[in-house]
Length: 144
Image (cartoon, rainbow, N blue to C red; front, side, top):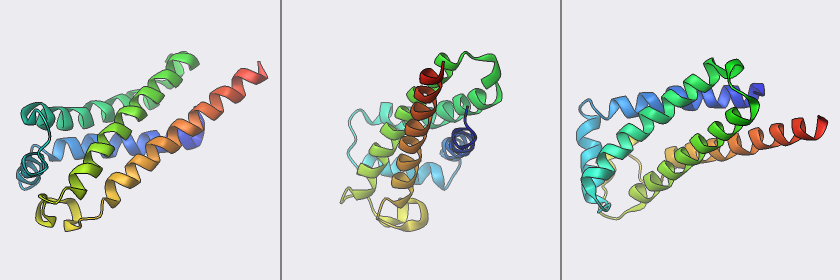
């Protein structure tokens, strides 16, 4: 695992885990509940739980991949990293939608701002991480 991928994965792991856990604690819990309801996401109960648990699980997976990277074959490590980054990218697309939905007010958003800067930042990090890992894996494949 390249140092840049390790750093981004560690940052994403800690951040996603923390954001997921915060959604169990007020005022974040009530903000998050309001976001899910006001954005009219389908299957609101499922959306609510999959958002929280998705962030926690993806955060834990990143942390495990970084900590135990030497015990995982390069192919499985790359595949796991890519799948986890795609999951985060998907979650951030949903968060982006929630931010721009006209029914969702600034008061229930992080930093109380409507533009989806936070989801866009984490989406970009996930895509960058995929690109860096894929580039590293492809480079290693060509050298062997």
